[in-house]
Length: 168
Image (cartoon, rainbow, N blue to C red; front, top):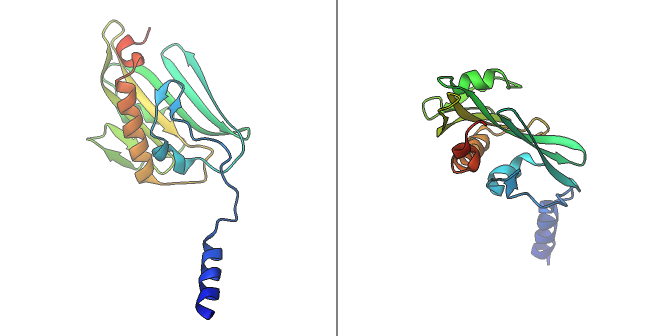
């Protein structure tokens, strides 16, 4: 009997009494597929989620808003040929990305990451396509998760119409 009582108290301690997600984690962000498992750690509990995009000359942003709070932003931006990921990050970063991968092609920290696509080149305008994921509204920090997220997001962008269509 004592063993059963101990088991019940252990199971009760493991239950999650905190708030939960009442929304579905998106599989795409403004038309770009994303691995929900990679995105999930950065999304807080809440009721409502909205995903909205904005495009302007050479830049495509996508915002993930949960309960009226901006949590995650993704960006696809065309920059002059010959720039680096560090250059792109310097104009967008909220904190200094202290990690890099693939010879500097990806720069990341616990809450944001930046990448450079391969073979997404607009020869007419001499530009290359860069990516960013910024979890500015998330309380979660995890450099390894952010690295996985930027690599998978950039890989999806490389197969998109944005990559093959150019800056236009």
